[in-house]
Length: 422
Image (tube, rainbow, N blue to C red):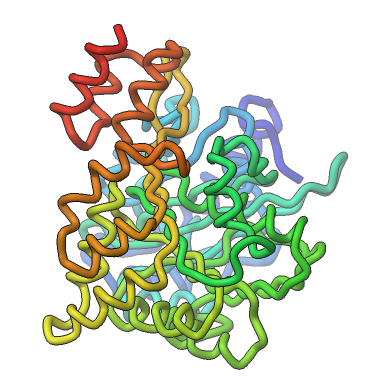
C-alpha cells in the first residue's frame, strides 16, 4: 500500500530502505564503473529476499503516488546530476525534494534495477536506454490504477530514471476547445479517413490530447482502434469501439511493423505513437492512403514546421512523392504548448491547421511559407496560429504579456497582436 511521504510510516520505510541500499553500496568496490557496476548491482538485487525487494518497490511506489497529490508531472533521480536528490516537476518547475534523505548514485541504481525484469536490464545494458511503463494499484479505498511512462538511462556511467505520470482520468474532449468543424474532422462518424497529427515539444501534453480524441471516438463510434505505443501509457477500456494496445518491444518490434501489421487486423482507426523515423512516416502515409483514419504525433512546435519535417525526413529522391501524398492524406495538424498561467499552473495553447484546398495546393507546390497566413485567416473553419491563441489567453488574463512573448513562435507577430489587443 502507498504511504504518504510526509507521514511517520514513510520515514520508517525510508530508514529500512536506506539500510538495504547502503548494504549494497558497501559491497561494491569503488573502482567498478559503468556496465560492470550495473551487472554487479543486478547480482546484489537478485540476491535480496523478497521482503526487502518489496520494501524497495513500496518506497518507489509511494514516491510515484505522491506525484498525484502535489500535481507533479515527472519524478527524476539517480546519476551524479541529481546531487543525490529526488526531483519532481510541479506545474512546469523542476524542484529537488529536500525532505527526503539523499540516495547516492549506487543506492539509486539499486532502486531502479529492482523494478526491472531480467530482459529489461539486458536491453538497458545493450542499448544504454530503456523505455518502459510502470503500473501501481491502489488496494484501498478506491482501487485506482496509476500508470507512468519511464525512461532509464546513463548519466556519466551511473543509472538515472525519469517517470512521467499518466493521467488516471482522461481529459474531456470538450475541454480542448476545438472548433466544431475541427472536432468533426477528428471523429470517425464524420470523416472516415485521413491523417491527423498532434505535435509539440516533450511535455507539451500531446499524449493527453490524443487520448481525449481516442476516448471521444470510443464513446461515439462503432469501430476498431489499434494503438501502437512506446510504451503504452493510458490504457483505454473498449466502449463502443474495440480497442487494441500494442507496445513496441513487447507486442510488436517497431512502429513501422505495427503500422503495416495493423492493415491485416481490420482497423478503422490506427494510432501511431510517434512518427520518429522515415520508415514509420512512409508506413503511416501508406495506411492512410489505403483509406484508414490515422492519428500520430511529432516533436515539432508549429504546423508548417511539421509539414517541412515530414518531407525533410524522407530520402531526397522520394521527397516530391511524399509531398504530394502528404497533401492528399493530411487533414489537420494541432501544434500545442503548455503555458504557465498567472496563478502558477499551466494552460493549453494550440495552433490548428485544417487542410483546405489552398493549403493542399501550397504543400504540393512546395510553398509552405504561405501556410502561416492561411492559418491566420482561417478562423471560419477552426484555424488559428499559436500567436492568436496566446493573444487570446493574454486578453482573458490567464497569462502575462511576457509569457505570451516567450512562448510565441513568431515574436514579431505576437507583439503586433498584443499591442492591438491592449
